Length: 147
Length: 147
Image (cartoon, rainbow over all chains, first blue to last red; front, side):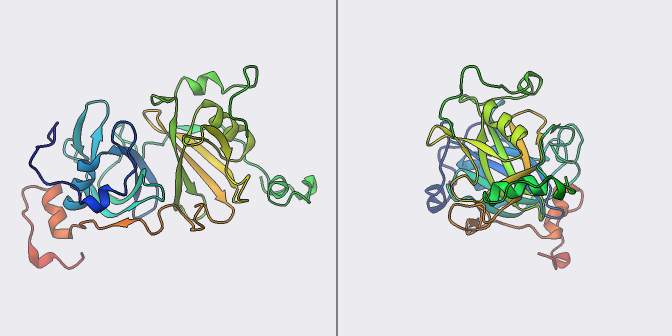
């Protein structure tokens, strides 16, 4: 883990770098998804160098915004993320990284970072949904059996 | 769609708002996942008001950083996202929104925003991986049959 990138080190393929839309801090969001069961495990942040390391090493590296340094997932915890695939989204500001996860993904010891974070949300019934996709049909409460 | 939030309108439950870690622009990332097949469809951004609308209306709303306005997915395209669940991650800066997606999620007409964005990535073999999780065992090339 190196806090600053060596001036003369390898750099990200310029064709890939040109496709990225960085935020004000030079970062893109990286959604990490379990390649086996497709659960979303966590979201981290990558600059060009973290992405280069991830693509070349076969293990996921991030840029830590709080510590302002690179970190390779699992180096401290042993909970390594092995890369299966990496894809960039249509506007270039988000990566989807599919991984084989070793151990729990979350530093709290839970399998994902979203465990325990459920928020109360309205789930529309089938009848209620119909009025959103076909405005000519108002909701019919009698059909509401599948909320 | 309202560009500015009404001063006297409803607001997000303060207990939920207190759990959010906003970025410099008052936003959190929202990963949208298909509830049926678990594909990651897209990533958008929400402020407190977009989250309130999402939780209350049963449809996903975002804050558009480029247009600086709220947008409810599907109002223009018809490609509505019906909420199935919403969860906040362990550090409060990312939401996972599971949805029933109507039509393609991406404005390009593809099912997800990551279609066509695959980047070349190293995938380590089983033998190579072993040396990352058990340093006492160096990689054995003979075992490398499952790349």
